[in-house]
Image (cartoon, rainbow, N blue to C red; front, side):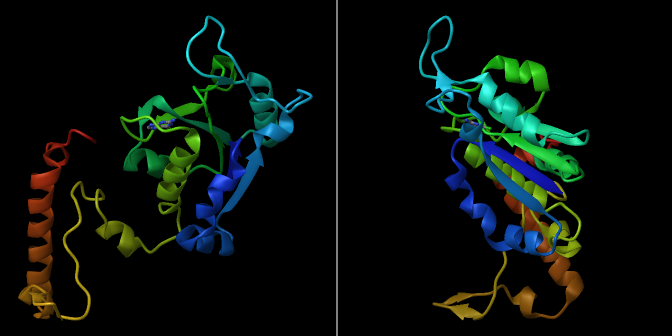
Length: 224
Ligand code: 6GU
């Protein structure tokens, strides 16, 4: 998979050089290119923002530099994503769909947003990562990319994916590692019993209990 990230803040993306994403790149499963939108500006001062027509707060990102940046990477198989607080809400299902794409282009908006004509011309998939407002699309892009990369074949083991929160519609059960006694807090007996059926049943029960408590909406299937 190739991911091109178009941004005015290329330095924000160092997180994508760490851990699982780093290994996916090393395995050749993933290529991430960070592209500076400013380098495409035809303005003599490389300006990329301006006041909104009709007035209102803040600045908007101009169409021209974004248009040229998209055109520099777009091909027939590209899917364009625009992280935006007014997009559809991101979830695991959407992450799994995006993980099947060959080429993703992320447009990171900043300031009060981007000129509507970019949306009209490219018809990007607008995705919000939740009901709150971030300063720009950079953090949201990283959240979306981090989530979808884990779903690409070969990035992490199938067992890890099967076990994690949301995959079976519930939150993950509590987990423990050594030592068995930490400051008087003892690991539940069943986990050291060696009885796999009992361990399985305990985990399932804990998972359901936690989900009922914290995310009852998941049990009712409201977020499917
Ligand atoms: Cl994708 N962008 C911004 N700026 N704010 C957000 C968001 C995205 N998702 C939730 N809030």
